[in-house]
Length: 472
Image (cartoon, rainbow, N blue to C red; front, side, top):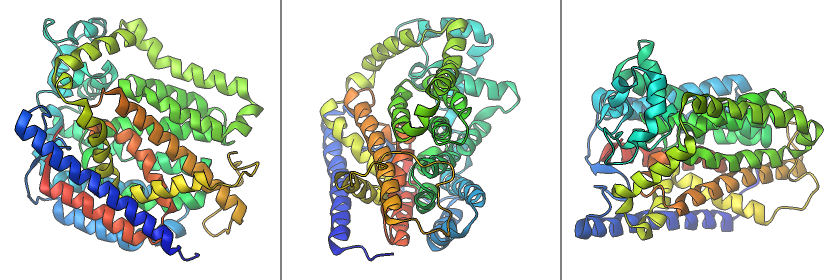
């Protein structure tokens, strides 16, 4: 590998320093606002957390996983067969997420997360008649209505709550099973992102991104938050669409549509994943042009399944969202200052994606700015063009792959900024934006010296988990 120029390393460090300064200012300004005006409703701004230095049963395992990934993952990610890499990535991500969750202990870190007063498991008894509850769902969103839903139930379409109701119905009852579900499913998001990056860019970049997807600080909130589960569903929607538009089989489009429809009924804000889906279609436009009607029918047909089912059951998504906006401004959302959170939310994003992602995004931006205007720069590779771990891609194909990956993460960042400017996510974005964070992490594939950057990622996650007790 060519030695990274000094100016690139300096620019990376300056970007990380700027991000660290953003976090520091968010902490200091947030602390002042909260102490003076009590309008932030978080105890350790900008993160929804309490200062609580501690160790727990997961501490030794978390340290062991971190050391092992830093030491061995960069090499193994190159040598393992592709399917073996995917299995190893999921297994290691599971170990990392479980160990971080158990730093807080079983009850505080896993079993008690989804049983707190504002969480999903508190209303399972109200779903004894699921069709009737869905028909009546919007009547309990706004505060002041009879038996208003707790915050998280009111703040999401009913598929979120219904997931845990169905788990309860099949015998997986209680916070332990719910937490295990979120961690297990949420950890598959890294596999989905790897599949998509390989399809849309190339295998070499996917392999370089793998250790960073495994060791992400975001795992602190994946275990155990329902947003980790939402992130995985959204990630697989994008991954299946990537497979459909790069020649792996147009039938994957139906699955992509189905999961996107489910994503929209898990969280209102994740409708913005349509932007990332559009980016996938742009990257795969050469294949899309070959069978546009078939792909469109499968994608739209799949995307209609969940909305049609919930509409026929009596739930009106648009009415639910309209009432949610009312409920949001009735509560702390109407008090939390937009002028602080519109930039402090970005500090939360720095914390869940880590310094390596900041440097990677800088390099992605530089790649887009200086990209060569080659005819194939934005065209997705065919199924046979992904280089194997041992192949040496030409300079032009490597540049094209880097441009495609840079474009994907840039569109993800755009979607996140739109969510930020909407003002509907003031605070708590360290968990709410987990689905977007998963698609910023691949930018780390642009970085040289991965072990140094992985060390920074691991230290940040360990410090966050051991110094703070995170909410939700």
